[in-house]
Amino acid sequence: MLSFFPSACRQPDHAPRALEIVVPTEASILDPRFSTRSLDIKVTRLVHAGLVGLDPDTLEPVPLVATGWKFVDERTLVLHLKKNLTFHSGRPLEPADVCATIAGLADPSLGSPHRAVVRAIGGCSVTGGHEVTIRLAEPRATLLSDLEVPILRRDEILRAPAPDGDLDGLGPYRISRLHPGSVELSPARTGVLPEPGRRVVVRTVRDANARALRLLAGRSDIAPNAVPHTLLPTFSGRDGLEVVSRPGANVTYLLFQNDRPPYDRADVRRAISMAIDREKIVRTLLGSHAQTAGWIFPKGHWANPDGYDPVAFDEDAAREVLRQLPPASLLTSTDRARVTIARAIGQMLEDAGLEVQIIPLDLGVLLQRLDQGDFLMAILQMPELTEPNILKWFFHPSGVPGEGGEGRNRARFRSRRAGELLDRASEERAIELRRSDYASLAGLMRAELPVLPLWHEDQVAVVSRRAKGFRLSAEGRWLAVAAIPGPGR
Image (cartoon, rainbow, N blue to C red; front, side):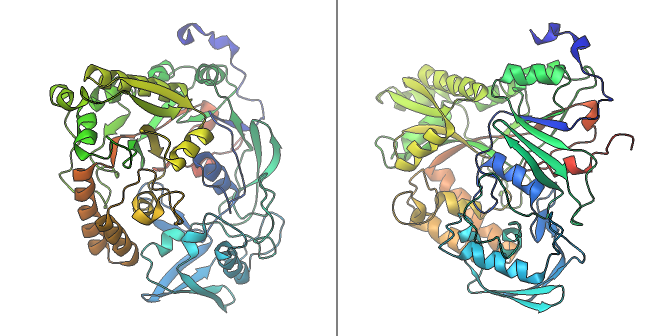
């Protein structure tokens, strides 16, 4: 159908309208103190800024609100702030705002999910006109990456939750209008980054074909990871549209309920792993815009040990185990492309002897069932692998939902050894020691397979002529949209 869509329906490029980013889901909360979902974080990081940012390629911490920093000792960090920064309201940024933000996020009364990020900070003090000193109460290897959390005004940090994002920010955009299905962003002059040249609209279009048609009609300008891979060839070189891609810092994985028989057995989890032909799925349904995964982190990441290739596809060996199992269910989101992939995996498992029912669920319902342990298998994605300490959130034995700890260990992976490795890696700043701990963890999880890493998807965007030059960062964020020149530039 798309190949016959008339190019004459495109709107003229000279129309002075906002750049439109089209996405498949709707933002749920635009308050950076409470946003945790991928889309919410992408939008809020256009509106707000932290002391540090992330390099779009290496994902290493880089100066943003801070101009630089220095560790005085293992637990003391001095940061120098940029001068002449202002919030969207025009109010100047002061060092006291930094310390108030850290204290506010740590305050239990606020209830921010980012409290865990700042818990290790024992104190923050203003030590100069443009300087703050942070002292750790306990070792924290990821302190610099943690300081990516947005800085807010000290009189707003403890405000009641603001789902519509009505908070003063330091980012290159401010929220100018919010409608069901769209967020309008206007350029802001704060000094953190140069003032953007264009307005931006983030528009929700749930149907994949509708998103594709909107791009072809010239209504949308950027579709970041929002077009099925099978449709991407339609856009290459057509009507000023371009498909741009890069390796992504993410992982799609198969989650097992390790507390539920027979999925509490490593041999069952391994048999399921051998029954899935990941190469075929990457080549066909993902259009070769992915790399099969041997570990949570992609090859080339410093926390990925060498020599960890994916579990080999072996349908015959898998059948010996799977044909003895009762029927199973596989949960997935309602996104059409994800359902297609789940059905392909389900068919592969049935070919190997395991009857599987595919159950698509709204994302909120899906996550609720996973937190409650009401599942056998599910397909999920970690969309932003910016720091390996995220593994502590997902796999530490103290983080099983509903058992009093913090975390989302939905796999119910209860390895004491894994907990020891994760604790030590989160405390030691020396990169070689951390790499050794994560290599040991990779070996342990390779043997136990509490989850099955499937593939690392490329960051792929369809980009219009008006948005030429836009590139996704490795974790898929959109800050590059702020650098797109305005009309006439």
